[in-house]
Image 1 (cartoon, rainbow, N blue to C red):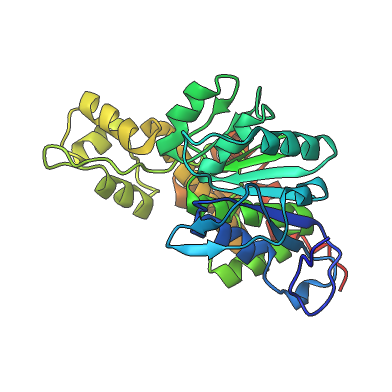
Image 2 (cartoon, rainbow, N blue to C red):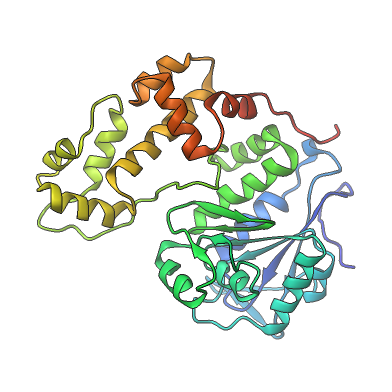
Length: 333
């Protein structure tokens, strides 16, 4: 058993193991190491243990020309509590059958599995995502969908979960997922503490459509992004399809097509998400009345706010506020 922590105090929390491979995605691995491998004395002795394991033989290099050496070999997966795949070599890169076998065995004994970005292809190769919903970077979504038809691919979410398996979208979405895992394990205060050190928000919850704008080419001198900025800056305005199309100087038919290309969602879906997201921020900032929040974010009434919030988040605004304002760290101090 390797030394799985460089911390000056012994830890006995969940063992998080990140995969190392040749052509390692440096940033994705750094995300995992930063969240789970950084010394955090304020969290106590039950904080995570962290280690890396090599899933192939031979010298390994990471993006940027770095040479990497693992703490252990693939046998470390046999005792890991959480296994994270920090990206992968590419959508077309084969996943070693031995790795799939170890991941399946780890899952069968109760381990959690997670991936960042293209790492979803590794988890999909195990068959464990069959019948479930997964996400990946939107550039890879169609390839994942066509290659693993038993997996429902959601290319509009920051991250998704299927039983004890988690997948995240592009690299930065991996930070959101790692913070969410911390929140599930140790509560909102711990997640907030980790997020603050990363200078990241801690409240972007997965499991629902969180639409990401795609970078699309500018056409005919017109683009969608100025509209998106304008809507976010004035949510209380009545943004109808006609009004938005006029803002972009397009016909409604052209606007609907261009908007969906740019955001991955219809205007109404996207607008509802943005309003809910704005409501989430206000709910966590203080004790503002529901009617006031509803008016500020453009829902018009507390009833409408509650309806769309529950449809999007799966819980009521009041439940969300209580969960993220009052939840305590479940670590002994």
